[in-house]
Image (cartoon, rainbow, N blue to C red; front, top):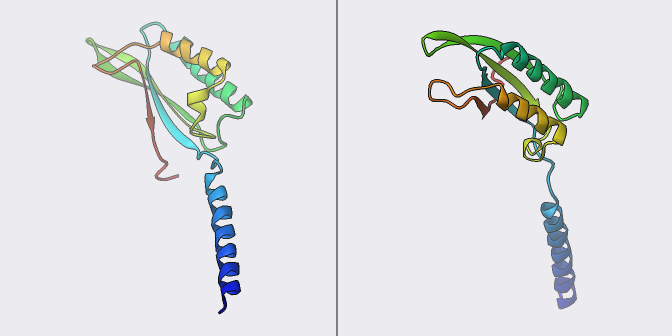
Amino acid sequence: MNVRHIYAALGLLCAALAQGSSIAAQPRPEEPETVMITLHAKAGAEAELAQVIARHWETAQRLKLVTNTPHVTLRGAEPAEGAMRTFFVDVFTWRDASIPDAAPKEIQAIWADMNRLVEKRNGRPGLTIDEVALVAK
């Protein structure tokens, strides 16, 4: 192998590395994120909170912020302050994990309504969000 071949090979290697680094530097699309939101309804606000949760889902679908994976909203009761109090659990998948950090104003307004209708309970915040993964269908 002569010097000219070595320089040609180095040139090809540098070009390949440069091309590879520009590919690596391009932003990767975010991955979907499945969340479980637990909402502890204030006494007397249960029906309104259920409507706000439904409106959140409808709005997120209309704005194409969520995936077509299953969505479920559950209602339950837990003991708090000597009585059974209502809570909701809403499970769905954001299309992109960055959406909650840059949510549209319409979604943010719904979140404000949710926060107005929940209360701290049993040492926990009125609303909690946990990232979860589907284990079985």
